[in-house]
View (cartoon, rainbow, N blue to C red):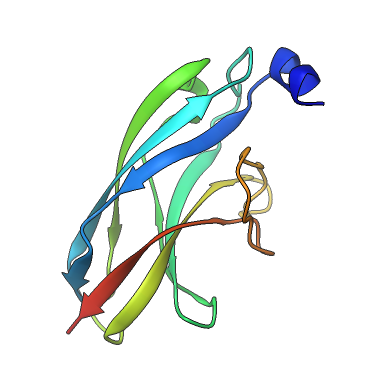
Length: 133
């Protein structure tokens, strides 16, 4: 199946991600991702790549669409620089960073990465960030 999927189109993999371990409410959290397209073609539509934060219960508490153009993710490796603003009123604690590609018709995550751990809402968990006051 993997060989078939690689020959018919895109196959995005979240290869690595880095960001500061901590930040304060109201800050902007910079995020660097390495995304690999292991397929044979790009994705041809201008869908939005999104970062989000979820709390300990899995609830989304912050969302930030990025300016990354996924149509430019040709086969090979791509570095994505993105940011997620931390809301002023976010409670101190540890939050999970998530990534998704949104379907513009529904506004919901709708592209599967070739990674394990996909959440029920279609987002993919990345690392953690500790938010202070």
